[in-house]
Length: 371
Image (cartoon, rainbow, N blue to C red):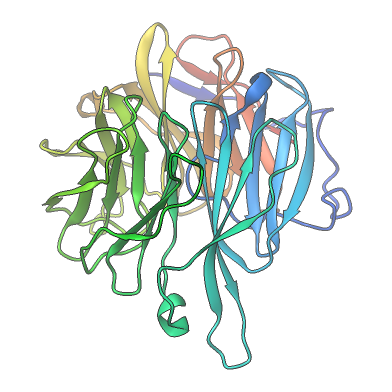
């Protein structure tokens, strides 16, 4: 699948780059999960974080090109942020918060908020607590990941101090259920979670003795342990994408080669090349009337790289093309209101740059703009 990118361009819709225009807050990290999302009314929103909270940019109208923002939502002590969106368009934010204490052991908990409509305020941040009561164990809580099933239920997965996997989710009444210990040991951050269109949740987490995997036997059941997958995964690099009904393709960085691979449980590991410095971004899109998977990552030098292949046909090969941008963290990928592929990157200066697919064949991208 040909991938072509135009050079960067300055947009008349861009915001000034001075810190005052950023409301005194600059982005320094991309969230976990997909952080470029199509919301209600067909407008895209981009999210980033810093230690003080969450930043959001929103398209003024479906398809752009003008954007508003950033809006700032304070969450002091935020060390990590995971984003998940349901079929209802609601965006769920799950963060890990660490508050310093005089005795040197921070108070660590998870926090959660929801955005119901594009460009609108978030709900209040609510603490989800910590599965550990002892503060020293609580401080060793891992990085959360979230997924929303077809009923709008949020599942929060996190590694505990004993390096097993914990689950907390919303109940049918809207109240949060108690923490569930899904067991396991010797796991590493961060879980990769897939919410299938059928409503089933599937989880993969890297481990020292292979990757642990949990699947739901049916929607809304408690995820059950499946056999470990005997692979090595660079911690924090695994992502999941539904590539067929109830079937996940996992993408991760191989710690031995430093390159990206793809894997469907029960099949071979497929090398994809590249040298990602963090997790890859993955989504499906129709390109030239074919169902394709689009992938993007920042390489070790900070170059934003883009590729596409037929869905579940990675073994036919794919070719990484530079977009001309330099960034940090994981790029954002989304389809806009007109079905065009949009890629976003957190630039090294803390601004967000966005490029949109043009009308040429294949995956040809227009020039990027600063929003």
